[in-house]
Image (cartoon, rainbow, N blue to C red; front, side, top):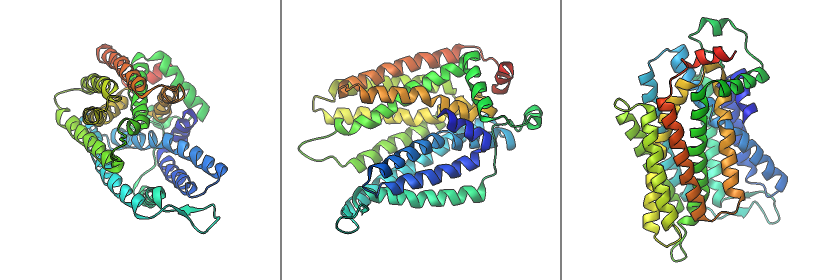
Length: 366
């Protein structure tokens, strides 16, 4: 994650976004091959692509908005809400189409004894390849390149681009020097760590021996909850700053997972599903809100690097949840505790005095 973020800032967000498309296409293609080394290559390229996905696209948009175009902060917050609303709408359609593709063609080898397979659960990956190709073409045609520089700052425009190691070291120094940057990172790790732990555990929590659950439809309902949350975030944006919205998210999300932990092993599938939908509604509010907060706190020239540094403790949380053989109840209890800690971090951010704008904080570090 750290290296990927430095690459994003050093070599450009547009190039990084195109690289994401290429790497994830490779990852999708490897799913067709029944060979361990090939599948491992797919997991590696998929992991690198995921780090790019959660940094370079957002960094590009923030840089274009605040630097090249110099739009207002209010419009940026609206753009985050609109972006995630569309994102979740596409995810709803993808869930429905993905289930149709997975059920439409039988999973089978190309010919008897072949290592190459098609059909079944591979259908959604093939659809993803088509979407990635379209996305890469649109990026190449429509995007302008930007780097880890504040285009509105004459100092940054005149300064030469830093090497990857220098960018990484500056981001680490900023974490130690600026309290708000560190607190936002901890809040991100707590929420997104609990979210990914939830992703790995909602399927067994909703499994039934009587009727196989329609997981594609359930996923689409989750995404609909997220879309409602993103729209709600946009509606309340003029009346509640990002920190207050995040406090609501952490508090309600914590309560929802406490309920899920209490009922997930009792066969109360409806209540468990309802609590999951509430949590996904919180996820919908979270991403536009935290995206705007990070745009204010993190300096432009280390934005990609910092966003990926935030993912290091997040990944540690997910690994801890997956490798400790916790029960489903313990996992959701652990996630609820993380959200309570994240709420405290957001509260400290809300009541702490900013050390100045992002670039000012960075200049103090340098």
